Each structure stands twice: as C-alpha cells, then as structure tokens.
Image 1: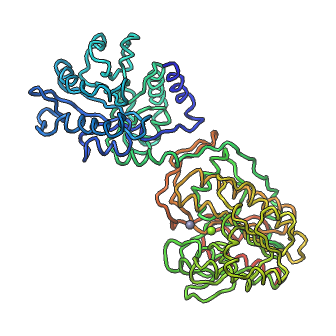
Image 2: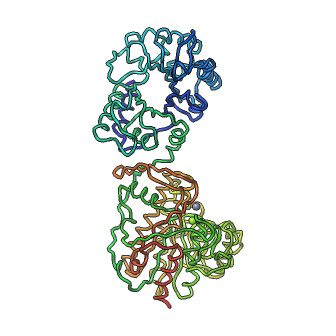
Image 3: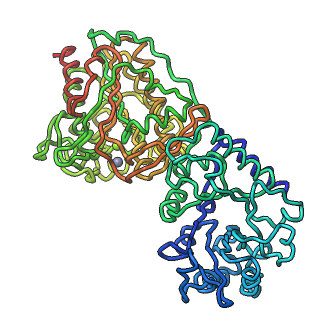
Length: 607
Ligand code: MG
Ligand code: ZN
C-alpha cells in the first residue's frame, strides 16, 4: 500500500515533467450497458473499468438506466456476469489474456443496498476466485452503497466507491476500491482549452487528496472529448470517464506512439547572418530536404528541443505548394523531381516530366560547369528523393534501373544505402573504372577521396535504432572534400526518415529524425557563415502523417502528436533560405520555383 501511495503521488507531482504511461487500462466505460455491445466493446479495447446501473426487481438483478426501461432479457447475469466468468475460465482465471491486467467493474446500485446487494452477493459468490482480492476482477459498488460502518458486513470481494469528502476509518478505507465525485462539483469547464486556474486547482487538489489515500480517482460526467481527456490526464486522473468507448479506446491505445520526451537537447548554431540580406556572389548551394517535414514536425522538434532549433535562425522563409501534376497530394518522387528539374510530374515518376520524358536535373546541369555535386541521404540513395537528381524513370520502384542511371549522370559524392541496387545493376566495376571509389563500408568514410560512392545499409537505420551522426558526418566529409573547389558545389542532403516516422504514426520516430535533420541544418549554417558565398535552402517535399500537436511542454521537451493519416498530405511546406539571394525564397510559390530560384542564382554565377 505504501508503494502504491508513493507511486500515485509520483504521477501527480511529476505530470508536467515526465510522460505518464496512460493506456486503455485507464479508461472507464460509463453507462457501459448503453453501448452497442455491452461489456464486449469496452473489453475488446482493453478498458480497465466498466460501469453498469443495477436494479433489483422480482428477486432478480437487471441492468437498465431507468426502472421503467427494465427489459426481462437484460439481466446482470446475462450481460455481465456470464461473459466475465467465461473469459476468466478461458484465460486461466484472469479476465484479460495479460494476467497482470485487472478489470474494475463498477456497479451502480439504483435500488436500495438492502436487498439489492444481498442479491448481488448471491450471484457473485460462486465466482469468488475470479474476484479481487483473489482474482483480478474488482467489484466496486456505487450508487446506493451501505453506510461505511456496514462495509465490513459484506464479503471481501465487495469493494465500495468512496467519496473524497467522507472521512473513512482505516478499516473502512480498506474496502474502498475507488474514490469518485462529480466533475461539476469542482468546475463548469466545457472541455475546450484548459479549466480556469481556480477550477484547475480544485481538480488537482481533489485528485491529490484521493491519491494521498492510496486510491485511484474518477470524476464522473467530466467533459468527454480528446482535449478534455488529455487535460484530465495532465491532472493525474486514474480513470477517464467516457461514453465514447470506441473513440477513447482508439485514443488511449495510440498513447505509446503519440508522445515523446527529449532527454538530450542541444544548443543550435547562432548564425552571423553574413550576406543574408545581400544579392552578391553565390558559389555553393546546399539544398537540405526533410522528407515529410511539415510545420507540425518542425514544431514538435522545436518543442522537444526546449524551444530551440537551428531552423529558428532563418529569417527568409517562404512556403512551397507541393501538388504533383496528377494529384493534389504529391509523393516524394514527384516532389523531388520538382526540385531537381523544375518540372511538375506524376506521382511515382523520377526525373521525367508529366509526359514521362526525361528532363535534366540540377546536378547534371552544373557538373559540366565545374561545380562539384553530392547527394546524401539517411535512406536508400535509389529511393525517390535522391533518385530524382540523377535518374530518369517513370516508376520509383525501378531501383535497379535507377542505380544504372547513375553511370550516365554521375555525381562526385554519393552517401546513403542501396549498394545492392548497384550490384544488381552491374555497374560497380564500370563506375570504378571511371575513377570513382566505391565502398559499402561506413568505416571507409574518412579515407575516401572524391569522386566516391559510399553506400552502407547498416548505417541508415533510424535514429532510434542507432544511426548516430551519419548525416552530419557525411555532410562534413562532403564539405571537406569540396571546400577548395574553384567553381563551388551543389549538395543535396536528405533527412529521409522524418517521412518514415510520419507513415508509421510514431512520434518518437518523427521527432528524433526531425532533430537529427536540424543538426544537419546547423552544420550547413555554420559552413555558410564561414565563407559568405553559400546559399542554404531547407525545405520538404510534402508533409507526412497529417500531424497535429494536441499537447506539449517546451520546458520539459515533451510533445504529444496526433496523426490524421498514414500517408502524405497536401498542405504547403515551409522553405527556409540563408545566405546571399536567400531573400528570393520568401513568399508562396510552387515547389518547381525552388529549382528556378536555384538555377537563376547559379546562372548568374556561371553562365
Ligand atoms: Mg525521401
Ligand atoms: Zn513518404
């Protein structure tokens, strides 16, 4: 018991600092018998608590909302007791397959305790082994409960729903399974935003008081919608009271992937804004693409990193409209083709226009002019985003053909994964004969000299699975290789997996990839300041996941996301620009304009 009190107090005190592990075990199905399938709907979602109103009539127990609505076939036994017993028998004595997972069954007595409770005890007695404290189905009596001094007259498997304003003796408290009160006693809050300070204080106080007694807390008739559930969770409620069983079940079952708390925040690079408002010479161009990075992804990173990002340093910001030639919502193939060639194309198409005719990419246009070129990705280098910069194929899945296109449109440095596609394409020896170093060992990076290809799949796992500083190290190596290039360079580096996290609807994935990409942005800004002739552009091909943020705490580095799709969305994405000519990236324009703006700057430099 002492442990329980400490544990519950711990939740209460620390809610703003740490992520509470809420699950459907915290869900309470109020008036459960009114659901389309009583008990089963809540049970199948793993609810920790269900509630039924009980009437005693003709020596039988009925489940009903009103006396007048009692139906002869809606008995306590049929709707609840029999299914519960059947499940316990099936699961070796436990209500859930997971034997550590209990179920609280709140029985709201609508007829007087005597004789209703006596009838109930008679029905429950044969199944005592399944009932707490012996089993893990906890029967808690609410409504017409007996007086606390009479609690002890009932069998040990009968617990009672207490009230926070009642002072129980130690013995009585042992029979209290739960402490509940009406939400309206503390607040008139409608569930939008947050309760006013006075109400919030009253609510937190009552929950704390209940926790101090070592009991779980429930507030009935509380506002019943997503925002209200989250606010109640932030206040440390144990059972979220709901009539929306399906919705709350879906919401709570996604909690694990919805939250992220960052424990290793970093300080961003502080830019000097050298030539940021000038239109002078541009020698180098760095294009950083956060695949699937929309505003919510960026703000989730900013929140997780305690309110700071390298991206926050940009002053010249625009928005890119991302639609492809054949769809309101682009994919990464059409998105990258727009940046690489200035042409809108069909989804899935790589480096070709909407008629599937090959169009030259930036890299193939600038390389003959002496600019060094590099493609870096935290994913497969034959995947859509990097592929659009060197391949021309109608279909992104043609990865072997995409790899073979590299021989026609080479770049000076290529780092990512996808070595196997080059093996299949059979062009590694040809590439090597052309004087290009090729390796599939990450450990070779330091010793490699441009032109080189380094593709090592073991290094492009997610950040969560240990990718480490792959992106930053690849980028630094490339900068070092190109820094003395007389005609400058063009580098495209991709944070490929922000998109993967969005598709997977996993916030920890999105945020860790977002922060990794932002570190890359910091390196680009640092380099730009070191030479004053570098234009840095950071953008996304599209947003992924339809992400919104329903809660967050900048101080705690905590973020709570909500996805609306497992695919891409059609909303505009930001474009951040830094260095000379960055001013021209302000405004709202098509994604193809990014290509146009880059080429305009390059043409000014090398006609
Ligand atoms: Mg990509
Ligand atoms: Zn995607």
